[in-house]
Amino acid sequence: MLSVFGRWYRRKFSDPDSAMLLILLLLTTAMLLLWGELIMPVLVAAVIAYLLDWPVCRLVNLGLSRSIACTLVLLCFIAVTIMLFVGLVPIITKQSINLIQETPVIWQQAQDWILTLPDKYPNYVQVYQIHQMMEGLNEKLVDVGETIISASFSNIANVAALLVYLILVPLMVFFMLKDKLFFLASISKLLPKERRLISQVGHEMNAQVANYIRGKVIEILIVGSASCVTFVLMDLRYAMLLGVLVGLSVLIPYIGAAVVTIPVAIVAMFQWGISPEFWYLMIAYGIIQALDGNLLVPLLFSEAVSLHPLYIIIAVLFFGGLWGFWGVFFAIPLATLVKAVITAWSGGPDLPSDPPLSE
Image 1 (cartoon, one colour):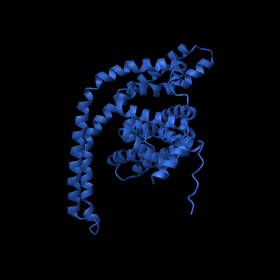
Image 2 (image 1 turned 45 degrees about the horizontal axis):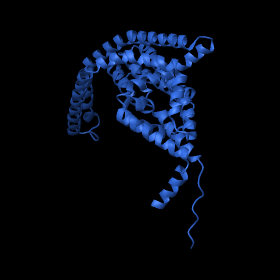
Image 3 (image 1 turned 60 degrees about the vertical axis):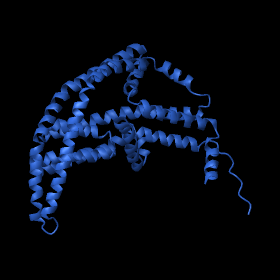
Image 4 (image 1 turned 45 degrees about the vertical axis):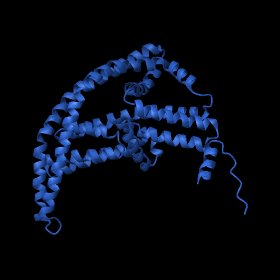
């Protein structure tokens, strides 16, 4: 067994370029695991810089200096962000408070409906089973409520850090955009000379990450806006809150759409019951999800779609468990990175295999 592993290792990592790529990946992973929280503002700034680099390059091509282009694009981004928050946050906050206040009423109605099941289906559902299920659900709801309250109090201490980030992140974004070539040259000097595979993977991932971030932001805006407009036109309660949740659900491929369907269906059922209005809403919601999955995603993420859905789900679970929100957000690029690394190693020069043993 050890000899088989040794032959595989010599074939794939005898090339110094392959060994340097492996060392760089291990060091980067260790740095993110150990100091991920400390460098989080830098990572957030890098994500925003990727998002804004495209309009900056377009303005530079039109004849503006890079400093002026970076300033204009960053000011526009900040203005749009402030307008979105000023317009959406008060509405979403009010609807969230109302929904929390009405949650006990919704739960009571759900309990009343569940208690009618033994009469409707006496051969399949027994009363004691319903009571056992209710007791278990009530205990879970109490635990979830305590967790939410404790998380809310623990987040109060992060308000000061958030205010600092609101100042530091825009400054870092500006310098990343303005001195992009300088930083790229500095990083290039730090890399070892044996960097053929590092450069190959880096060039491939640089374009894919930039396209992914821009595409994901566009997808969130389109899906969220379409959902908000649809829910408002159909007079669904908490329309803006649910529309924003649907837009944010696209951050988690496949899983997000399935999870966000639950609150949409519960609110619609609480408002209308099992009526034609309920089914009209669910059909409209299904159309939005179908258009997103079959039209919007292939247009925005043509490279990512080449990954098998099972690989994407595994990447979401694995990287989300490692790095939380950002692991989920970058699950597809990270899965693509793994694929690019495997391709680079597979394409490396192989050593001649060992001669077969004589009989």
